[in-house]
Length: 66
Image 1 (cartoon, helix red, strand yellow):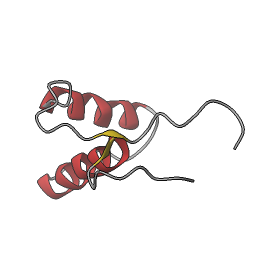
Image 2 (cartoon, helix red, strand yellow):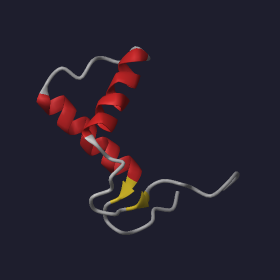
Image 3 (cartoon, one colour):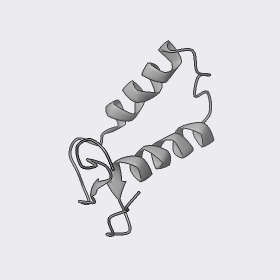
Image 4 (cartoon, one colour):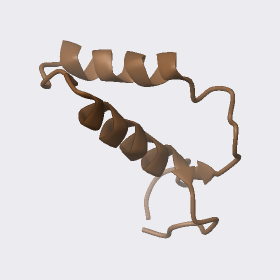
């Protein structure tokens, strides 16, 4: 692999103070600002939040190698 080592996913730490409702809303707004469809219902928001968690954190406590 070329370049620096992977930074993500981070080790999962339950209760990470950085992962707030405002953070999730800000990330959603960023996507909308770049032309992606708005997150208009609770299911979209829930799925979006789960996708962020899966990208940011290693919720299975194992590092991925790829």
